[in-house]
Amino acid sequence: MNKQAPSAGRILTLVAFTASCIGLLLYLWISFGGTTSLGPRGYEISAEFNQATELGSQADVRISGVDVGKVISVGLDRRTGLTRAVMEIDPQFAPRPADTRAILRQKTLLGETYIELSPGSATARKLPDGAMLPRGQVAPTVQLDQILSTFDPATRQAFETWMQQDGIALTNRGEDLNEALAELYPFATNLDSVLAVLNRDSAATSTLLNDSGQVFSAIAHSPAALRQLIVNADGAFSATAAQSTALAQTIKAFPPFLVATKTTVDRVARFAQTTKPLVDELRPAAVQLSPALESLAVLAPQLKSLLVNVGPLTHASKAGVPALETFLNDSVPLLTRATPYLAGVIPVIDYINDYRREIAGFFANGTAASQATLPAASGHGLVHYVRVSSPINPETLTDYSNRLSSNRGNPYLVPNGYQLLDGLPVFGSYLCTSNPQPTIGPTIPASLAAVLSADYYTSDPGGPPCKAQPPLGEATTGQLKSFPQLQPTP
Image 1: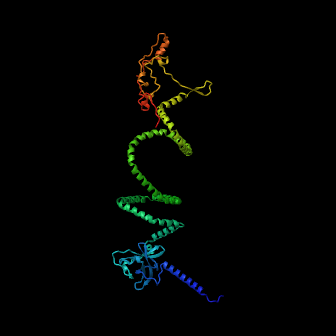
Image 2: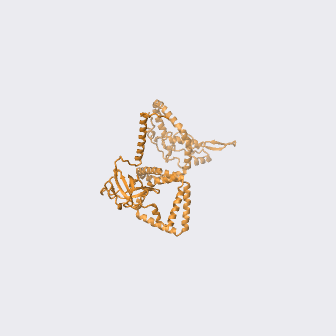
Image 3: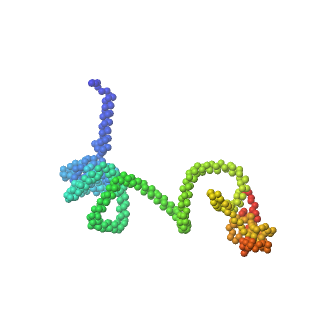
């Protein structure tokens, strides 16, 4: 056992520790609403209540749900037999108007009473410090048991059953109840908007309520139908409760969906306003487009097959397009060097382009002429043969020393000359002669002469009128010359 006197350092440490504990306790006391004799007294008013058994010191004083002060003392007024509560009002809310009213309210069903003050009139005189509210401005407190005692025994029994069933229904559902209570404020805000709309359309609302009353009156005349409705509703609610998790997720996702929908609708509205002039201009074309789309439905299967077959091409283009881009970039120097040569090639290509239909027809007719087939002589497979027709006219029988009037041969036909319906033009007017066709000589046998007359010599041996085509240079390159003269591209 140490009998030595404590040193000065230990004494200072002990004093500092004791002072810190006292300071901490004092801080906690003041933080929780306690008062000290050393602090200044604030603005105080008092009121007397007939039933204040649950009201205690440091209870809240509120105005319109906002804390404005605390109850600093509660005591019995022996003269009146009432409970006198002294309230200290915060400086920013003092002084209070003389027409201020007071009433006791409870935060929960279990108690926790507080004093509710009315805002009062801004133009009324102010209560002095320490004033007491008149008895006429203190509303009597109604306890819950007093409300329940007004009900008859059957109603109280039904209320008791209802509360018991609520307890069973809310077992292990406290978090759900808290979330539901948290949504009451948004619900009340939205309900206020709905009620404003109903008030604005009061006539329609009255009609709806009247019709609803008639519906309920009709239901009351058929208890069996009402019972079946309740049973079906219970089944529907039970099925909904079984999917509560999915329903909760849907409800949580619904507000973001509404926000996104509103944004989309706003964009669509702006787009509609912007495109309205274009739509008005396209309306006549749309009327004519409908028959075309109906005809296009015939090609839909082929178009679907094309789109399906384009898939591999699209996949290959992911590598092919960059490779083609690289090839084109690398070909720039070559094309730059080839420019002088291309200047002479381009006019030739342009001239050939004027005869693109004739060239395409040549290859198409050549391909079609070789597609005829016959069974092979050996009896195995098919063989192709070329279909050729030879014109029959007097000029195919022999050569003539002079150009006949029926001759329309033209080795330099203008582009699209084969599409003319009034005959083939000749290269120049000097090729239109008047030399008649020869007659069948007497030395020809009669049987052969009959064949020649029927097949080679027609009733109109001269053919269509002979006319000269425009100069070939004018028809192709715009030059007023018989033949075009191709010039290098500058």
